[in-house]
Length: 286
Image 1 (cartoon, one colour):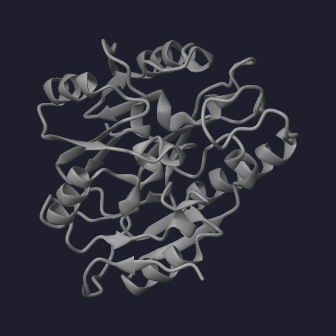
Image 2 (image 1 turned 90 degrees about the vertical axis):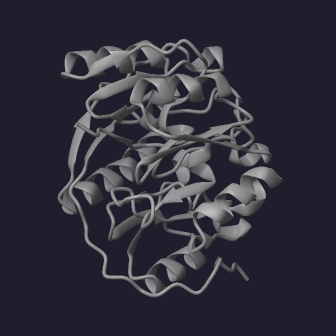
Image 3 (image 1 turned 60 degrees about the horizontal axis):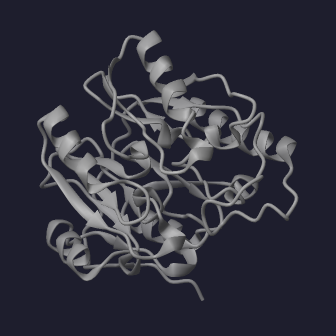
């Protein structure tokens, strides 16, 4: 049975939703035609129409929660462009662009940077390999930065200099969780560091990173491998409502115990490309 446990017993806190602004990309050209992560199997058929319907349900969920959702036009030949979170990292109206590891996704970086520039963001072109919010997460006043599979550690220093914020490097060790946003969910994004909280999969990290997370977030929810395997941690929280994978039932129960309102959605077709709720969603922090 799937089981999700809190690291410690934490009191239920009154939660408050805060409206957010997101960038998304319709999966009009979604398919799995190459393999750059363990989830992808090009020999298996994909249903683009189903992917669009599931994505639309996620979009409608965000709109129903009162969030602003902006759209970037999909580009034929870039099937992973739907995973908007990888397109950059935005704080204080400054957009740090993505520089993808694999050639198949490299054209996405300039496309997203062009969108940022056309929509009033100051664009910082990256000098190092990074995959945007896939490996960069704002938690309170701190940026958690992943490395190990995609994003270069040199980009962490670049981000620290750009935003003048503390950047904490974390090393991923499980190839199934190759981006930080598959192994950590940010639950209280807008609070100060002393109140911020997360959920995560301990086994996705090396020993040193597990120690950092345990010290910084003693009340974090530890999510089971079963819930993580359906990308349950690849979620979006507005401080109260947490949009998660529908099949992450253990994580859902733990969120309810903590006073959050989990909302399950089905993105099973996009999971064939290695993406979930967070992968489809880039936060625009102006």
